[in-house]
Picture 1 (tube, rainbow, N blue to C red):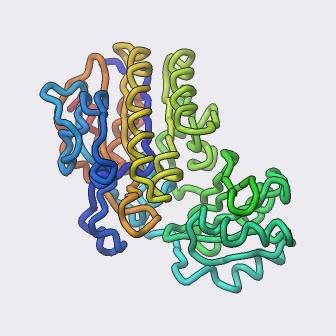
Picture 2: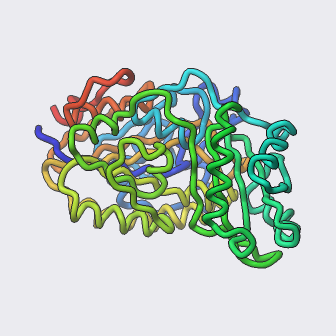
Length: 389
């Protein structure tokens, strides 16, 4: 079958059960989707359920479709780690050999001394923290002194927060670029700008977040797709995640509903190639904030948007729905969790079969390579023949 267009929608942070090595990451018991649904008192997902989400091994809290509309399965992360860049890079064919560095005891003094020297800014914090809590703790002092709020988490991130009225967003971005330049030597996965607004007690992060990941250590399948002359549209933070490699168009979003709007718009105007969307709110707004009820409501909203996207697919299209890691809102941790991720593959002319448990996210990348005739790539096992015959 001649597939010409693929759509990937990443439900950021929607894991579906702990991986066998979850204990190594202190993530025993993590099961983002099922735990969230139970904590929220139930959920209504008619479209994801009809695709076969409830049929995936390990998923128990979603209704099981008697006649699923899509192929279904789950993917195991082969790379060490559990962050956004690691997950997305593996989907694009890169399996990391070692995890990025983390700093559970706080960012080293030597690192922070260099930060002050190279950026010209003092800092507040320097420890692992949640995004909202750190603003409550240091936001008022930041507004008085102009010192930047710097923090990390259980993931390999160097986050810099600044009030937009104190430090203009473009200036914050400049500081982040400086930090990215020397943090490669510390094996930090991402530098993240975290602009915020408001007054003490009412601080709110804005949608002008921006990420600077370290360079991927190899070729991405999307680079090959782009090199073939096909469009690769990155929606949400996709461009940032892939360090702007392999993307022909970057479309930024203000939230997950806007992400679906932009995906639908791309489906209307981009007739071949890849549309790659990240829906980040599940992770940032609900998983990291341990808000199970908010997570459930947000997932129901996006579920209702899927038919509009599906109506724009033709016989030569395939839609993949997956995730990049877990972020269980019901565990004491507010960080990512080491989990399986769902894999749904829908096409109007495609088979509806069980894809089982894939040994790596790179199986998706290898499948993309087959769809667009740019493979094989170095990692993963294609499931194209399983869904297309």
